[in-house]
Length: 149
Image (cartoon, rainbow, N blue to C red; front, side, top):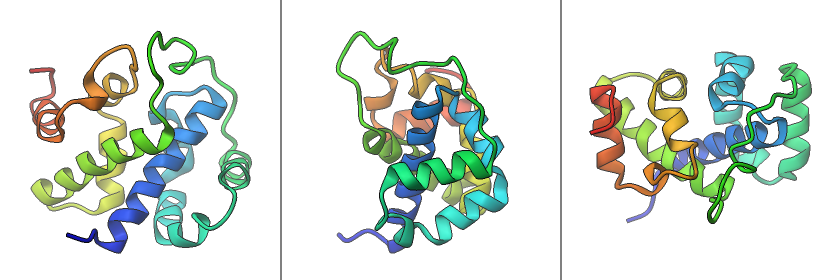
């Protein structure tokens, strides 16, 4: 089964959020909130164009435009195990956001903002835990219940 084109755009958007967060050493929620709804919609709408460009350049442009400051959150540096790529994490968030869109009948970007600002985001981003590679249905149920099950 082939994925919807917008699914791939969401995947790229989430992966870029993770890439920016890693580069600036910030929580994903901070990056999402600094980018803001308008920029996130732009990234999502133009993901196929941005995807053709160098991710470092795209990342740097959005860091500068959104005035994202250097932080101290280094989940990559704190990881004691194999580090998932920004693409791996983008896929986890994409799946969760799609489930939220469907269940809450909300827009993709509103769901993205809500997910990244929820309790589950730091759990996914703790690479010393197993959350990021758990079954997508389990991650969604934890998100829905607002606690780890």
